[in-house]
Image (cartoon, rainbow, N blue to C red):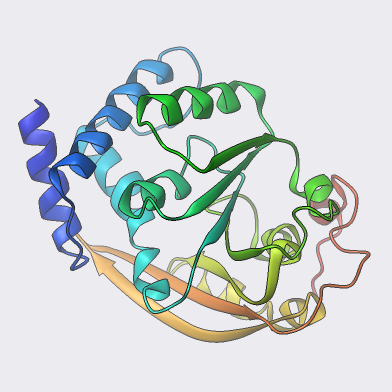
Length: 240
């Protein structure tokens, strides 16, 4: 089973023109095994099949490498990371990243603590909190080269969660599909209010999956009132 897993992983990652070494492949296999085991106890993913998890969690996460490959990225925050996507696959791919995983559900935080030990990942900080709270903390506010938030909420809400963490010159990477790209493109005014600007739209295709990335560059400081207190961004999105 391990060898078939690694063959499928290698084949799918090659579609992104990326390469994994044997140690990276082994870490993804250990990640897969832990995910399956923990998923019997707590709901980490609705995906069950080996190939489905490889494609829709691991390879989809690694697709984030494509739009940032020419950027000088050191510090990354993954907001609402859940079981660690996309942050942990990016860390496996490039161990030099300093990764902060932000998750509001304690049971998922326990999984993140366990999986980072299993994979022997260094320079990974796991925080149990909400983005609306941590985004006000001077230690984290406007302190990251890259912010990620995969499948967390609607675009206007995600932007208010994420952009306050990005330092000027840094990036928030919006992750869209052909089904919701229009919704993302209608957020330009919200992005501007939060201090950002859409710099580039990039389409990445693998195994009949299309992922559209919006590279949002931080141009100005986010106004102090954002993010608003917990629950407000979802109740009253910044739709302008």
